[in-house]
Length: 170
Image (cartoon, rainbow, N blue to C red; front, top):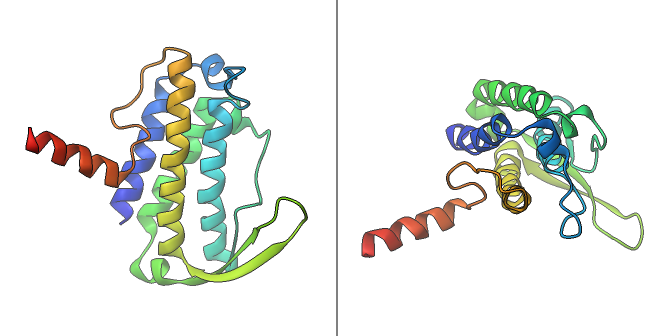
């Protein structure tokens, strides 16, 4: 499972190595209201929330670092992703099974928070799926700028399996 997490994060690392600071900060209006940098920062926030959750027993995805330098400089985001990758490699089976509490807001019309039991493995699966969802948005932002993309960027694992099966049937 950890190797799959690292595989997914490596897509972001490849993307970051191929983009300039200006391209990273660019907002392709009117189709988008956020930059590639804000999406990468949001992905990093989720992994940092899990990392903090191991330490304090509570994962709070609503604790975000909007406006952080991660949004402005791909090199800073790359350093965070490298650090997250190193952290993932330190996780044991016991760490993955660790039960924690998840806290999140659930209402758009008023502030309403819910707390639920979960575990680190389940939250890592969520973070990876969430990252892929944002990669798909990043792919559209990159295409709006005619930027190259890593292979299978923004493609869900189940979709990749389907596409491989389609190739085999040809």
